[in-house]
Amino acid sequence: MRYCGIKILGHSKTDFKHKTAFANRKRLLEPEMNFVDVKIESREKNPPYSWFTYLKISIGFSFICTILILTSFLALRIDNISIDKTYLSADLLNSTEISENIHAARLMYNSARLHLKAGNLDYAQEEITRVLKLYPTNIDALNLMLNVLDQQCIVKNKYCSYASWLSSMMSNNME
Image (cartoon, rainbow, N blue to C red):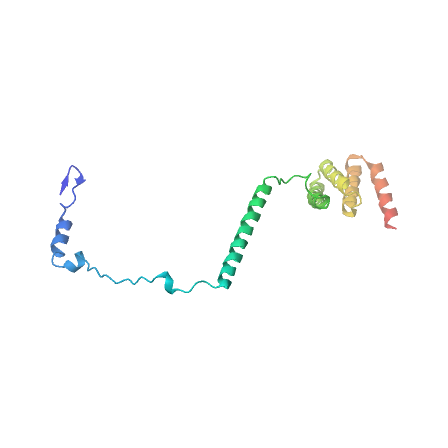
């Protein structure tokens, strides 16, 4: 039965069916309560702790206290630590800069090769110039610069003297 769309508890058909069906089954509605006698033993019957047990407890307690003190000390100190280049050691800073420079030089070298293949000689020359600023003795970069300058000389009739000078310098160093 419903009244204004609100269900009234205890007035549905299923509630009535359940009440009549389980009325004869009192054991399901009221479970039996079994009580168990609990024996209480006094503390006097237990033997006292040995000195070894007290020693283990004290060592464990001191270990936990030491860990807590160290973690609190480190937690207070960690606020003062900041990752800044001024606090880094010189070796770490140099190795980081070297790895960043190597990565940048590889990217610029590959970019210059792609620009040279596409015929963008000015962009290729700019990229190779940047690589040579980082690593002036890189043979691959010098060869690519020589190719770019030769192409500039052939196509635009520019940088011919630089191309011949670089070619003579590289031939002198190879010998």
